[in-house]
Length: 360
Image 1 (spheres, helix red, strand yellow):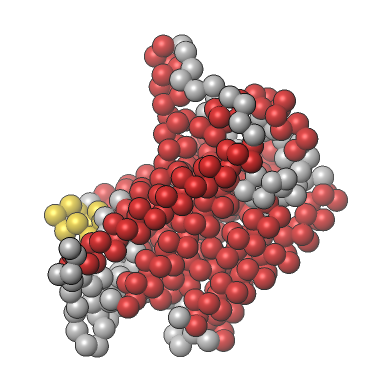
Image 2: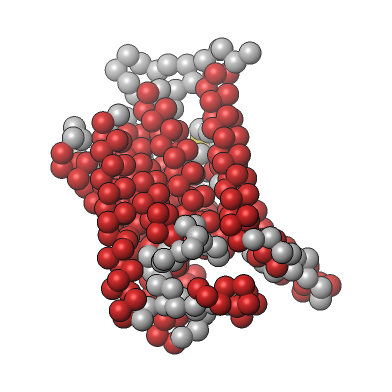
């Protein structure tokens, strides 16, 4: 438990202290956010607010993780932890390039779709290939070729090539979903913090009920390679988001930009694969899923009927254009995110109770 607490504490402090430094530097350099034309009347005052604040989240995560391993951790960094952090960083770099182009060209369009998809593809393929390596003494690799809900569904196996394709779909899907959600002050950061807190609980519970513990397999145990290190990564990322939220909450002093949103989406996808909870993540991250679906539905309906399903997509802008105050939308969406997380935890715990023979 101590490594988890240390990772969270260090990451929180770094995030809170480093973010205002980025605000000063980016403001001086003129690294300001451009605003979409459709919502300029609502967000005109935000034009020029420093962006690329996701760098603070990435730095805080890494510092929290490394300090933990240099001080209180009994074991060195693991394959699972480093792979998830590497995936997060790689997508953060893609997002940074996207943000930087937006700033230089003074427009709300950065990397084109092809370039962004290529960046996501490279990051996903590298992660998927490496995640099937590094088996521990029990033969467990960071990720599995099986589809998973709360554990691997052994009857559904992708195979090596199929898993690479699945990983790309999951990673690009989650990174874009978080990116869509990042349209209001603190909305994506607050939601991500809740999801990551959920994964601190899940990975810690997997640690306490690990099938490879010396006393032997227990009822409803979990086959995960590095549950403690996954919990450390989740705690560091959660605290980094909370620290960043101090400056990103309305009225935001800085935006995370694609640097943060793409990185956090990749982080969530990576966590779902190394904890064997890929389908459960759809429930836990339900708000991100709804935001992404609203964009897809808007496009499909408009192309088939030439009419808009929502006033504007992603979904949060629909309510804003309907007259809701921005803070009202944010808080209510946070409530929905919290409900999704609690429901996901409930399913996870109910499965454990049922497997242990104590459910009902």
